[in-house]
Image 1: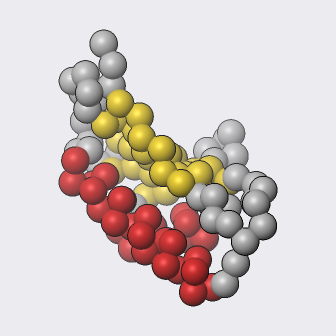
Image 2: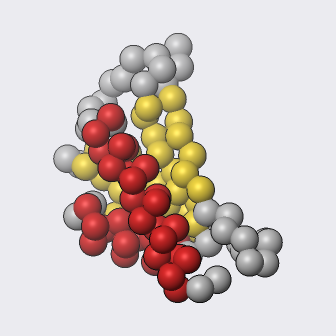
Length: 102
């Protein structure tokens, strides 16, 4: 995958991340239907950690399970996990969203 395509992908994902910051404020309780977790599955998780950490100033720490956890105001709100590149010349990275349920 070309460097330009990777950078474009991360910029598009950054738009999703901005929405995340605006609609998922740090707090410990949420009503049913509210977004409570975001998870980035990335073919290059280390690059994504650097990219989002630099772009938004997020605190992103390595979790003992091997993924990374992003926090705001000390409250975890997102994870970044490494995925395998299964499809040649195809971008498989994606954001997943978790909602609070009753």
